[in-house]
Image 1 (cartoon, rainbow, N blue to C red):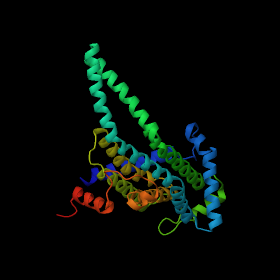
Image 2: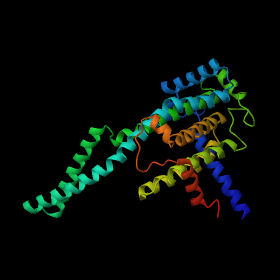
Image 3: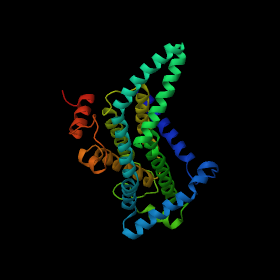
Length: 308
């Protein structure tokens, strides 16, 4: 009933508030958070934001949004293009790997019969030699799968450092003068960047953009493994969880998260364009579509039955 729903809603907000309070530098925390919030990369982020705002003469809300777009475009986009290039090379290697695997299976079978190998021993030699062959192919084409994770290793720490820098600016840890500028540096309904967005417009928008990113990625997968389904569902849950979290942090952080996600969505769509992929030297693959945006819209429409 309405009373239960109201109680559950208050409980959710209380839990989110405690989560945000646990991350607030105003309290004597110690530990990893205090160390990271006062680390050199976070101070670099604070200085970079201040330099951007001062040199461009922008209000703080615009400086935060532009800073997110600049970081995404200058750092993340090239790494994302590099990741797409590696994944395309790996996809184009699959037919060759398949043929070599079939030939290896036959050779191991013949050799096993000659030497009297058991099925377990034959399977061991097959897997061992297949790994060696695949490694040689990765080295030959310079496309080891681990290199595709470089984007994550750069993007996540960068996102955390900028978020902590904005929190320091919002709570006075970066100086009372900056905090005063933040308190009057917002726009529209979030005029005070040091206070949470009481309207929930920024948090809900953040959740919707993140969910859209997850769904666009999900509909592009024709064959989905169980692990990929678990990962997709995990990111769906995280997109929803980030809504109450974003509603309890300063608006400066919520604005940065929304701006970063929106630019990330734009880059994600841009990297689907065949013309842009050729510009980034991403090789053409069998799964690449000549009409990616029409296909994404059609897949989303079919999946969620937006029309009969």
